[in-house]
Image 1 (spheres, rainbow, N blue to C red):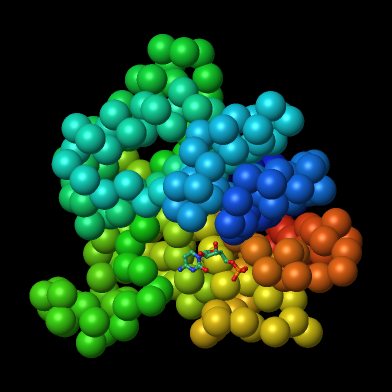
Image 2: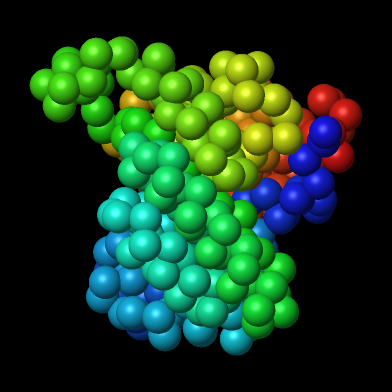
Length: 251
Ligand code: C5P
């Protein structure tokens, strides 16, 4: 089955709203509304500003990826997901290592809450292995598999348990699509235009390469935030996405 969650190329661009406070976040929301598909609100901004930053995005009719990576007992995460639905999150995520029951109860709770209030259910993604962890780190934590094996194992668990996709690094896109099928959504950070600095990202792909490899959404922060003309950067990225979709016949 083909993933129909996204259609226009711009819908696939997620802007990492990595701002330290409300004023700076609001300035970015004002500048980029209509130029990106979703605004990703992470732990720093959400802890600093609370739900009002999400409400501000939704008031402008823009979409939100609530990147809070929930991980707790099933009941707690399920209740948090219901709150995310009420807040208007279009996408949110949980740690796959929270286990099958946590993922399943959360998926069911989010769907039920969305039906109850009459909104479209958010896309629930799973985080597999944080890209800051290498094989040695995993061994120290107590996992016997290497990072790639863990990613596949946790992504399969997430899928079986009701997650609709994963957040994955550029190097994992093709493998995940091959192992878990085209309809399992892959969201990929670590994106850079070919002439841009990599910053602290160890392995990067251009938007074109990521979409060609199978990414359904790309997450982009600094390549938009740290250039002179952020709107133009968005247009270039969206064009890159459109070209890749046309080349791979996925548009
Ligand atoms: O500025 P840049 O484009 O590198 O931002 C990427 C965004 O994606 C940041 O919000 C970062 O936290 C997030 N991210 C990442 N790598 C992961 C998971 C999330 O860069 N493995």
